[in-house]
Amino acid sequence: MAETAAAGEQTHTTAAHSWVGELLLRLLGAALQVSATWAVVHALTPEEAGVYFRGFVIALGLSTLLRGKYELYMAHHIIGRRAACNVSTGALLMQLARRMLLRSSLLCAALLVVTADLDIQAPQLQTVLQTYLPFVLALPFVSLSSFLGEALRAANRTLGIVVVAYALNLSMLLAVALAPPDASLALYSWAFLFGSVVSAGVAVALARRAFPATRAESSQPVCREVLEAVNARELIGLARGALLWGPLCILSVWAPAVQMAQYAVAARTALIVDFFLPALNLTGCRETLRAAQPVQVSCRLRVSQLAAALVYSSALVVPLLVLAQPTLALYGKPYDSQLTVYALLLGVQWANGVGRPAVRHAVLEWDARRIGVTLGSGALAVVLICALGVGTYGALAAAAASLIGALIVNGRAIVMALSNRHAGESQSGSPSPRGSI
Image (tube, rainbow, N blue to C red):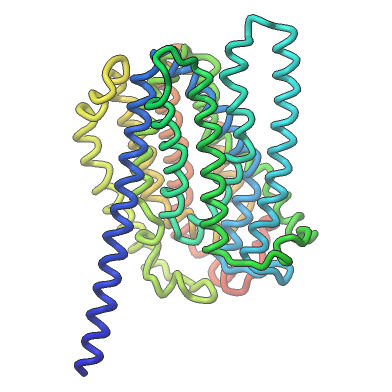
């Protein structure tokens, strides 16, 4: 009995150390995110910062559109513990990563051709093109790191996403620390490219550790069954990309650079909420997550999961709302005036946290028609609201549109999760009759 008690105490101590270590890593990620944002906006004028963050839209927005269908397929595969073409999850992940890399590299090459042509035809754009060139070159690396990061999220290894973000934020901090006083904006853009390359390398290492696979398996071509399933998600992936990045794209084109910078500062600060919303804490017991096959979850358990998500998300977001004024004051003018924008973007993070268990259930059951309608209607609402309001309200319109989109998608996901229309399908592995997978 003494030995059993000692073993239990040791296990408890190890778990406590693991929890404390994970919390410290998440706190470090949040600190790096805020510090990098603060350093950039103090090193650049508001107009320059707006131009710089437009480059973020180029890299991150385009990569979301390129990798959308691959992410959706891998999320369904990982959450549902599905088998595909007798290959391991790690091998399938690397096969799809290769294909997605080829897709993003082709778009990168096309954009480079357009950039070279503009450089010749319009010399007055040379400075702008030099600033955005590194963001275009970063497209394949951003796509790879984000794709692998979302696979880690689906497997409840959300700490990996935080660690992957370290490299990019550290590169921004180093660029500010090492840049001479008269450094051009292009220097900070090249720092973004460097951070993206390192992030991709870190993501590959973490993914290989989480999803081990032999080199022989990973080098095989993707089977036709998987390709058909991936391609069936093309429109849903595009709708998801428009939902996430539509407001920012519209803002970056139609709004002044200063408003772009103000929105980016508020958005990057609000994003720290996601660092502390690991899916593992929101989706039920560990035994359910570690089961070899997905476990059918009762309606009562789903309600319990959603209630826990509501409490957990509110406990994170409410203090940040209370501290919103002093938080924005850290960045100084003109960023401290965007209190409403920051509050709305915190609302986006809150909605995403509350709805995360429901979104996982929706991915697991995968009714393509209902998911397509949900994401399509959300994307349409977001784009229309932002397009109609950005001319008058600027960053406020983009933030309001993002919140409405998050409420539509997460609210609909909660309704889908609480309705047992597809009970049992997740266990049998049979596709939904309402849409192909």
